[in-house]
Image 1 (cartoon, rainbow, N blue to C red):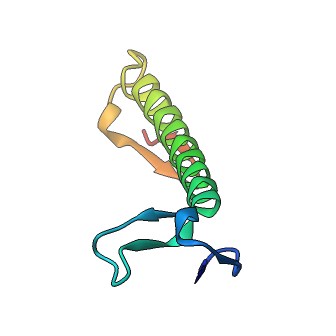
Image 2: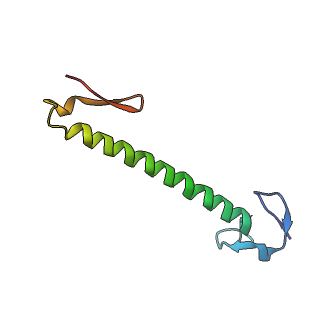
Length: 85
């Protein structure tokens, strides 16, 4: 029996992934907690990439605008791109 650091339940060792770096050879989180943590991590990563991609698209739209005489003067402030003439 081992106590999961996530859900704080005592579970048999078969409910833990193997991890050779740990003293007992098993992870500190049970399989269900590991899967939940992994799902949350990938969701956060997906959202972060989506936001950075959207910012990059807007930046390219501003910088590639032929009406702007000095595209290097576009600046990012408070979540938006502003043109400085």
